[in-house]
Length: 182
Image 1 (cartoon, rainbow, N blue to C red):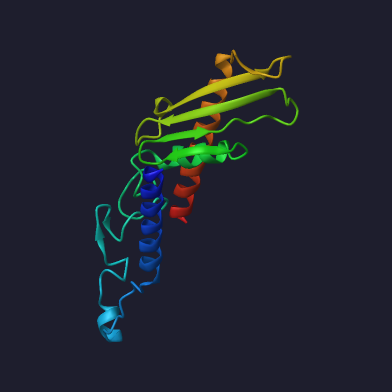
Image 2: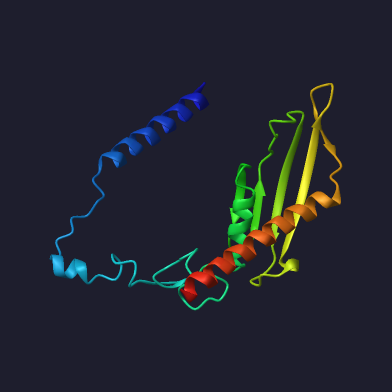
């Protein structure tokens, strides 16, 4: 019993400390003039130097001299955007633009609710090339005992998805080239 009392006293003490800490106004009053605030490089993010360069991270802009169409990506931005556009009907579980990995959640098409698919897309570099993207397709089928079981995926499915992404990426690049010429 004494051990329980010590635990409850500790719990009450931590709660009281948290309550008191929550009542303290931790926002300092900024007494600088408007001119001083206007010239502060930490308030104007376009003037601020960061680990991503001046102005910070800019994922989908072709400005900055990066020839792959994205200033902040470490992978080809056309492949990245084309991948996201191609799988837009599927729920995305994880997307890492720096590592070039997109992982979807399971998706069950309306026309076959007893089957579901999941994709892992890997963008392998900064070049828009056919070997710059890899897709892994996972398929499961709902068995009679209502358990999802792994099923085979034809190799052609993976190739069709990769080709679709590559085609869309090339179209995006060509549209940007045409816009820049006009």
